[in-house]
Length: 327
Length: 250
Image (cartoon, rainbow over the protein chains, first blue to last red):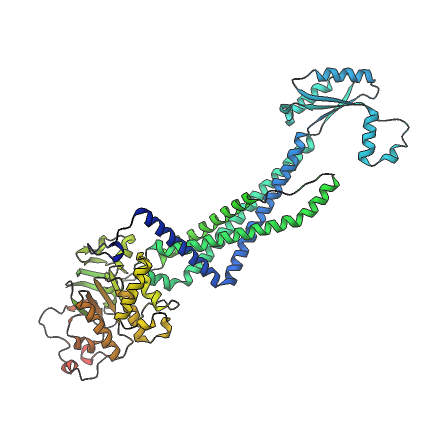
């Protein structure tokens, strides 16, 4: 394109090229520029490694915390399903009375999924095997446990508020001593998890901002160190975009490599923690594997880190490339 | 080709670089611009290449007023002007090939075209055998020729040179000037700023003289040539004068 001289065209336009071919050529050009930027990073390995290290570590922390919170949620989600109401009957209740109550409660089919009566002797047996206090229990001269009615509410009564109303209703039945709803500690746990989530977000936002600043500053130094080269390029007619792209690609690579490093670090940290978690789960006679670090997580981490890299370099490039003018 | 229409330029800080400068260089013409250091030669070249804008007046290239050119269009203007500098402005960490290819890469030529044109341009300045060397390995004259090859590689209709022979000995300077003559004969307008009066005298082209920001001689009128008072300068056997004659400086 010549603004001053009509009809001045280079040889490049004498052969007309189709739209598709131009797109392909543009793509190849961009690929070449991207690889050139990667090569530029490769040429100063120490500086590159240090920058990528900082980025990787910055992204690792929020990613790990996020996965931990996610896994905690997975565990507690299982607990919520098991929300049961235990009705402890008065100590003098006969088997007859207990069975009558079971029938009465079982008839409340609109609110209750299932009701089960646990007689004191079975409860004691269960307690012996589970608590590990078998021997000491043998010293008791009579079974201190009352009849217990285990009630599984319908799904809509599992939430804290409706469950509490159902509990009140059940407690009004005769021979019921008191009912217990294991929901208060769950609420506390939820509150803690939600605080942890907030903290993860705050840490993530702070570290993401720092990643943007780090990349922005690194690109700024790159631009300033190539000040003369940029001035010469402008002298021979390079547009700002032409000069900009290599730096944007540098930001892209920083983000990509930093994200990759972060993913590997998270994988390593989780592997490290895993044995401890297994140990703990074993104490609860459960099996638990930390999950969440799959291909999707890799994709999300890379997407975020690449975006941060591009944002950082874009800010720097917008500001500094305009400032450099040949003189 | 280049037309200055009552152009004044005041730099920030109040330094008046040009005052009411008027001149016109025809298409296909070769002309010299001379004057002291600081007289305004570089400012005139900067106004043409849009490295600066006039404070007052208009600069026209091929009839297009540069005041109408937007900032985003500046790169496209520069692609039409081949520029040569005293300090070469080469990229020292790139090979001669990469340096000369830069304008073509910027314009998006294909690899094959770039190969062909860079070879042709380097052949013209006689440096084809140094194509893979770094500029640092070249002499001053060779570096300047690489700069010239880069300026002409995309065949601009206008060539600007700012003190192209500033650091070169007389023989090399003459070679550079002969290159410019060759380009001029191929139809390129050439405008050279230099204070090498001996060289100008031997070339016998139109010479514009600027003094303290004013055009005191645009080389067209039949006034007494200020250089004519030193007639021996025209003698090709005389050693070239690279300093200003004392008469001129007083």
